[in-house]
Structures are given as structure tokens and as C-alpha cells.
Length: 100
Image (cartoon, rainbow, N blue to C red; front, top):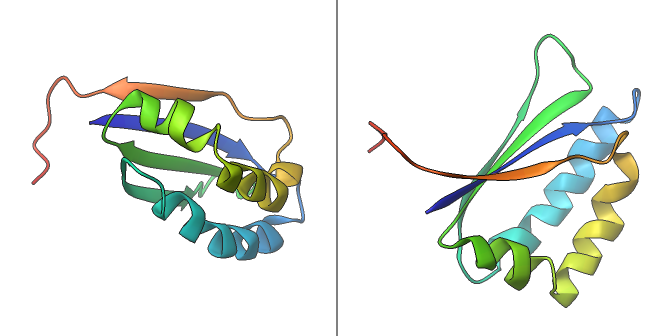
């Protein structure tokens, strides 16, 4: 399994609108092949910062299957205008875990 990590810095004052748009967009990512789960969490110290943690079965499920899909264009339309700057996205592979 692969963990996608994206730090999302949202333009100040648009946090509520971003959360609403993400609520609308979440079905897109959840419908993709290879998608497992996600968490969107808001930073307590920096309320305009969020972290998106998404689990995928394989790297290509995210980088090719999702990002090159027609559905990604809708995801982009709903969310990308909130970011400043545009986030770097990294992918991680588990070394150790005590998760169930």
C-alpha cells in the first residue's frame, strides 16, 4: 500500500468554502480504482493548513489512474483554486506499522 501525503495551504478566509468543496469532491477520489481510504485533517496551529493522507493500493493508481482520469479534471475544478502555493505531493511506503 502507498500513502499519498499532501500539505494543503488554503488561501486565508476560504477554509469553510474549501471544506465544503472537499465534501463535494470526496466521492471522486473514493470512486477510483486502487483507492483505499483518506483523511483530511486541519492544522490546529495554522488554521489555513490541511493535510491530506490518502491510501492507494499502488503508486500508479494515484499517479496514472487518478491524475490522468476525466474525474481528476472535476477534482481539479473543485479544489485547485484554493491552494496557495500549489502543494507538493509525496508518496510513502510503509517500513513499520502497528496499525490494525
